[in-house]
Amino acid sequence: MTLRIRQPQVTDTNGNALGTRLIRVEFNDQGPATVMYDGQRYDFTGKTGTHLKTGLPVREMATVRDARLWISLDGEHLWED
Image 1 (spheres, rainbow, N blue to C red):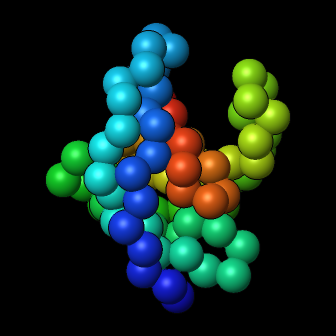
Image 2 (cartoon, helix red, strand yellow):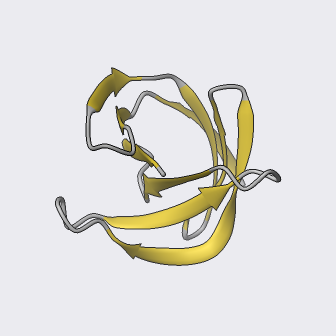
């Protein structure tokens, strides 16, 4: 795993741009495995997809309490869910 600090563009659940936020991301060989965002740890759920508006490949991340987000494979874009 490789630990990186990123400052992605963040979009809320209503599609509103929230600007950038500092996050900590642990990457495995395929993309983000763990994200620390807004004081919570999000782990990869195993679900992948493509963000429809951008066409970027993404991964779904979730906390133990089931808060979810989607993140691009490079960690530069984050969508709250």
